[in-house]
Image (cartoon, rainbow over all chains, first blue to last red; front, side, top):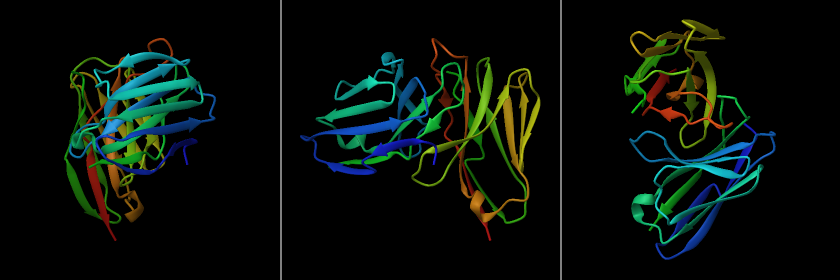
Length: 112
Length: 114
């Protein structure tokens, strides 16, 4: 266990549903990240939060909406998703000025 | 893009053999990291090598870095079935305001047969 938890671990949703992914860490890290991992593609960075402020939005469609209420929690709100959004969504965190990232186990998302 | 590219894409070996995976990247870096991912799980950090280092060891892992060739290799010695996983290299240009933007390659899928 890396100390980063994600819920739910599996999610199946229709294109009209609204759901949220949750990530939590109590490692004292101040940077948190959302990544998307699709089959046969490199891991894609989606969002970066640093001290609760969004510092990176990697041209992610607006149907993905992140929220970082504090340094320990990160959410990814989903609405009106497409089948091609089906993927493993990984959360990670890191200590300020540390290059090492700690990953959660991921949420396997299937959009029908 | 400074994306890392791992080679080979897949590698199958027998238990006890050594496994070598390579990573190439395109732009200058501050450091390079290797991560491991078991099927359908999160990534686990293995080792970090800085741009001014040429070789680093951690247990059965040996990483080399050749900045002139923009390449790195990960060697796993005396492999075990439990080493079966995907291995990714990740490059960065240094922390920006306290967070680190890493760029990952597609990974090498290693299978170690008992």
